[in-house]
Amino acid sequence: MASLPQAISTAPPALAVHNIQVVYGGAIEAVRDVSLEVRSGQIVALLGSNGAGKSTVLKAVSGVLDTEDGEIEKGSVHLFGEAVERAPAPAIVAQGMVQVPEGRRLFATLTVEENLVVGAHLQGAGRLAETRDYVYTLFPRLADRRKQIAGYLSGGEQQMVAIGRALMSRPKVLALDEPSLGLAPLVVTEIFNTIRKLRESSGLTILLVEQNANRALAIADYAYIMENGRVVLDGTSEQLRRNQDVREFYLGLSSQPGRTSMKDVKHYKRRKRWLS
Image (cartoon, rainbow, N blue to C red; front, side, top):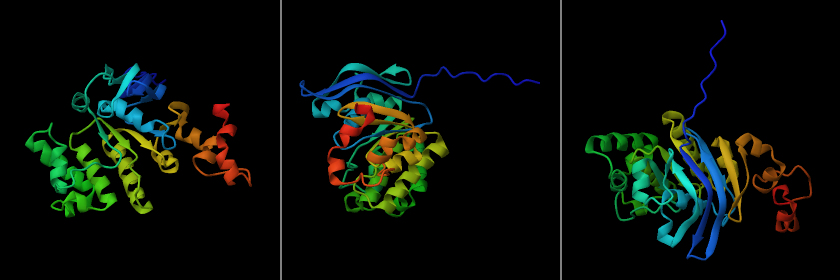
């Protein structure tokens, strides 16, 4: 007996960005015509060098551009089908998306547990305790340090607190800004294993902004590469891993000996096929 055809999902993406332009101070264009999609249950990476515009995109979709005199001048952002490009950050959090900012930005004088509680301001007492226990299960080290002042923790432990604080609001979409920044390799491995575990265990949707392309592509389903405020390439992680330019300029894997001199690195933009 023939099987019935699979129904095609018509649900909107968890997050959809369409041709946004972001301007700072009414004059400085930081992002132009950027579009991307994050489907429910996916890990999508936004890659690029420092200054490419990745964090600006994350701030735009999280509603926090106004803190730096930034504004979405054109385009749209939809969260589960609802337009949020003009929504304030608290409304976006209430709708299900939470950002873990670059640099952690903890309340340094509060304890680990107090920082976590701050992230649960939308939750009742019962759900707060349940979610806190879940965070401690993800990060056992934080359970041991729950009464310690957050400012005295190591960089890796502070990153765990920052992720845990975001999870306390029970988000549907987690936006991570440079989670590996300034961390030792072993700690980075632990953080990225946890990000993968979050998706596998709870189906959490994740938008990951990251400079470490190797780490990001190892856990992402799909990725976009930004340069000079624009998306220049996108594809599945496997497709990007096979791309010769991505391998050379982002993964440090050159198929041609002798192309890793400082002169080659200095003039690398001239050889990129996506910029030709």
